[in-house]
Amino acid sequence: MPNRVTINDSSENELFTAGNPGQIAGTITATVSSVDANMQVGDVDVSAANPMPVQQVIVTLTHFTGAKAASGSNQIVAAPGSGTRIVVVSFMIQNASTVATTVIMEDGTTDVFTALLQTQGAALSGAFLPGYEWRLADNAALQVNLSAANSHNVNVSYFTESV
Image (cartoon, rainbow, N blue to C red; front, side):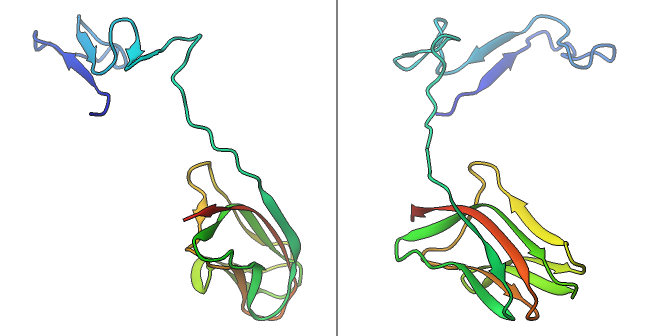
């Protein structure tokens, strides 16, 4: 059962007032299920000195920096093998030419992010928060598809994980 907070207001008064919309007006009783009066969750004491344990995952990032210029799909990171996928933490594709180019980031052969980079220096980029990274399909290569043979700078930070 997930933790939840129950507010009991048997007086049926307004809990918030127009003058104090962020403060509770009156007395309430709050019950937090699965945490007892001694601030224990199961067998774990929770306090400032002993905060709730959090699972931390440490990964080693790999960085690709290079240029791609061929029209069509250009491989950035090879498919990692069955049962493994690429997890992108950040990427940036920058038009190094003076010619407008449509750029598509691909999960294998599936289009994911698309942009028209009109001028030299224009870029398509993405940076993902921990837990919200771009996870490619099992055994899919990371590719950039260019609409024309124009030079583009490519920077990607990624790791791999088991599926």
